[in-house]
Image 1: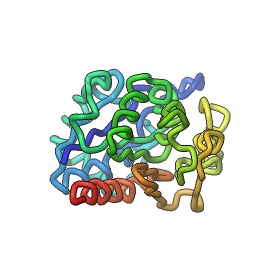
Image 2: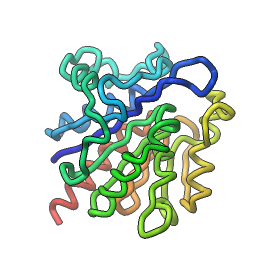
Image 3: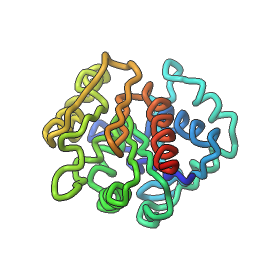
Image 4: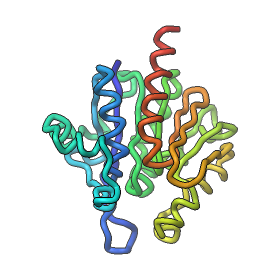
Length: 229
């Protein structure tokens, strides 16, 4: 099985002067779920190379077992430092794609033509697409058969309440929950910071950092079932 993981290259938190990027747990947890399952992994980002880690995601209170494991794993660190350029990857080379969250994707991946075309290529060829936390927001420009890809779909993502809790409601370019609802999705959620992921057809979405492992495991099951069929 071959999985493409897509990360942001964006490191500016709006015009606050603070840094952002991808959320470390949302990379580390799925990365090890996939690697432990024997999956061939390719990591990509718009600019290639080392993607920016959101410094907040690495604070002491946000540490997780997967992050601790990542810090002891030179191979994982090397893989992360050498992401390929998003423009150079093709959906036909992979079984599925997993989008890592963090606030960064709202600025670059949500507007990135390569990302939009890539998701459409995966989905149109019958392959699942998984996104967690803020990355479901990158679906805003993605269409399927002339309509928003999320229209009528059960999805989740970082909630308005969670954005309010981290005090970035007025900093982000758009709110994931509001945007997905605007596009006609059936947005579902659980109380803030609890793990929650949804599979609807070929679309897998997770609500927040705690949902990263579950979303990755759900994606593996989905791809395995499709291969068996």
